[in-house]
Picture 1 (spheres, rainbow over the protein chains, first blue to last red):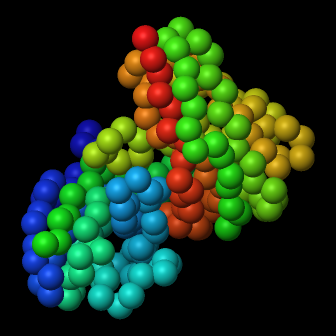
Picture 2 (cartoon, chains in turn cyan, green; picture 1 turned 45 degrees about the vertical axis):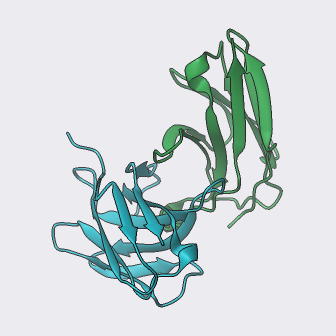
Length: 113
Length: 111
């Protein structure tokens, strides 16, 4: 039973470019959340997807957008990359309407040069 | 969502018991308390979750007083591999995905 998988593991982009990160949730999970973790900080909530809709959003600009597919997998898109977007991007999956814990992937390390 | 406060760092030695306390004065009635562990360049990993009193699993214990304004994660007989950042979080229900992480507690276990 695979856990949460994310791709790619590492990515290098330049300022102004666009990036897409991908996430497959743990088998049986229907909800995907994305977090950004800067070096030395705790993860910061970006947004959450359930039934292919954005359900909650953290304090992130519209440059950050997402999508959830019918198979529950998800993408995170970031446009017009800034140097400050360099971070570890984490995907977490869970079951909607439960108190079940979040399962996190190992993340995508994004470097913006 | 309730804010949490925990020590920035702690040191311990192998074989000792480690207790990390977290305060959450504004915890809501339906909030659970959850602890995660994170190693460098990895995602957080669930350790334990509780609502009140004491919860124990194979890796840790969680002590929650009656007023639920604080909680203590207890790691018995730590080893070098327990060196990690530990996060205390509160909040549950349909907001499960929107967890508020603080800076966490960096635990350094020494030989």
